[in-house]
Length: 167
Image (cartoon, rainbow, N blue to C red; front, side):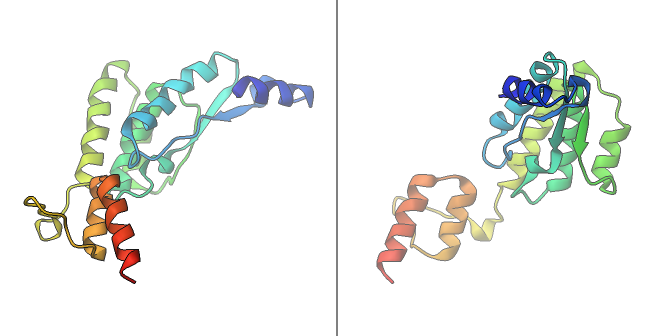
């Protein structure tokens, strides 16, 4: 896709040094691994002779600890060679990430930090946990919400269907 964008831009007279390609991050709430794939795309796009840009806060969409996730993700993006980020420069974690000097040997540690921060976002308070104890939970709004948070698509779909039928 980047090659097609570059070819179209050059056809219109835009030189490569003025082209920024956004590798489009998927929220880590959906998949940390897929959000990391975005980072792997950065050096591949840069090999084409263009610059990269990324909406950093997209990585944390839907998560309660957005600032921490954004800071870690920006540090990682810088290690992978990101040229420009769409950021909130007033966010304290972003400020820390901007002051950070990218170090290749920090990559694995930061990936683990990102994964742990995302996991923290999915830990529910004890009063909201669903205890299945061998039976299906009631199709209440709280149970459905908690199943969504847990990522149990099959049980969520079942409870939503049951709730809709009871209306």
